[in-house]
Image (cartoon, rainbow, N blue to C red):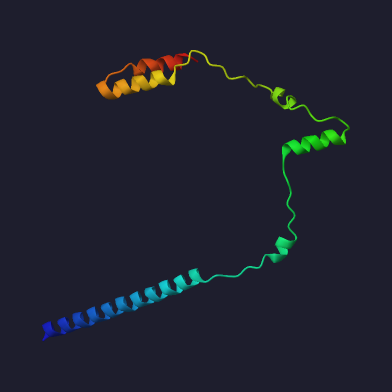
Length: 130
């Protein structure tokens, strides 16, 4: 008798558990459908007022310099003047004891083919070139 009661209680508990699972699955499916409907709804936005009042503005550094020169009674600015300007501490790039890229590629190919190369020597040479 006691065995039958335990089986019946387990059967009722399992039935309640599966009913709960089915209920939560249905709620999740409904929530997913509602979220999908919200994503597909389009809101109409009217920007005609902004489009009517829009005024395009040209932005250019060259025109600004020309306008300043004309306003100050000068002639057109010399385009070479901007190139001669150097900020403090500026140094021109120079090539000293560099290694050609073709030489590096040759060493890498030799390393890939034979497994041995003087690539370490090439890297050491690059580091000492500074």
